[in-house]
Image (cartoon, rainbow, N blue to C red; front, side, top):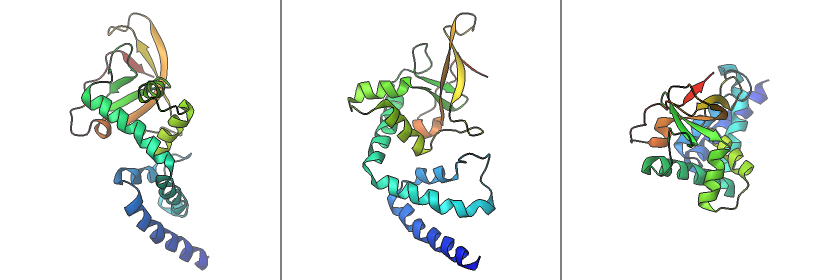
Length: 185
C-alpha cells in the first residue's frame, strides 16, 4: 500500500509541472469532468494522474491545434456576429447562459468555412476531448425541439448538440438572450 501512495504522489507533482507549462488554464478544468460516474470524489484521487498525463501529452500533438482551431473559429464567429444565433437555420442557440451547438451541423459549417479537409467525426471528437461542454449523467448530447416559430405552434425538428458556457465562448462580450425557438425536455 505504501509504495503505491508514493508513486501517485510523485506522479501528481511531476505532471503538475507539465500542466502549468503545456496546457492553457481553461484546459485544467476538464480534468474534473466526470467520465462515467456522477461525480469524482476525493478518494478516487488515484485516477486523476492518468487523466492529467493524457491532457498534457495531447496538448503537444498536432491534434490540439485542430481542436483549438474549431473553438477559436466558434469564439470569433460568435463575437464578430458572423455565426447566426437563435434563428430557425442557426446551428447555435442560447439557452439560459449556455450556448447550444447543434451537432453535427456546427462541425460541417466549420469544415466548409475553414476548408481544412478534416473529417467531421475527427473534429467533433477533438472538441469533446477539450472538455468544455456540459455533461449530464454521462450523456454528452442534449436533445431539444427546434420550432419554426416563437409561439411553438408550428412545425419543429428534433436536434441534438452540446451545451457550452456562454461566458467561455463570448468572453467579455454580453451573451445574447435566450433563443425563443428551442425547447428542452
